[in-house]
Image (cartoon, rainbow, N blue to C red; front, side, top):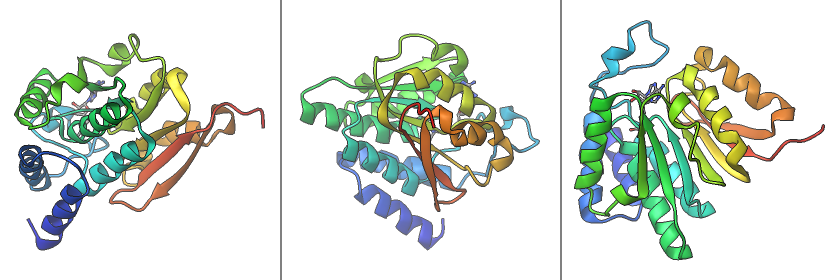
Length: 232
Ligand SMILES: C[S@@+](CC[C@H](N)C(=O)[O-])C[C@H]1O[C@@H](n2cnc3c(N)ncnc32)[C@H](O)[C@@H]1O
């Protein structure tokens, strides 16, 4: 791994509050993820080629997501696309810390279609040092089914880090529960733009109630706020 990636990883790890065990786990997982071959869901190669790949959110994006959650006090979070559970560690750390400081409850609803990936994710969370598993409800199976029921009354944050055809269906399922001011982060919005036509059109239609900007992280990261339905 080159120097700039090592530096970026260390900067990301320095921006979160976690036990040394969790930090070391994240360092290892990100290092494996950053050195694997690239996979994009818009590639012609079959999705099965991604079975043994992390396809994890990069460290700087994970740090941003963690800090957004901490800044907004988010406690009810949905993650579309969990894979080996790297980004989920950041989400669950923030939810645990927010819930503890607010004396409230909280949960990350994680989603993964592939049983082998779900198992690896669970192993990673069990080996983290922050007792993270109890903050995560991992729903195995196609998220178009698993997100149909049992969502919290109010959702504060949605991470869209999923194959592009699943992004809009995930958003549509979660939208009825989004609080006004909820944040949504969608990864690779520029590098996978051809796969995101339906999502972008939906977000840009004013009647759907979203405002957003694209921040210049690798591949483009769309940061979206749910402002609610408007008549204009
Ligand atoms: C980009 S990866 C997620 C990476 C993860 N957020 C991280 O940072 O570690 C997307 C994941 O979505 C999963 N996936 C694809 N289609 C799905 C579906 N219909 N329902 C649930 N998960 C799905 C894939 O198996 C893959 O592991």
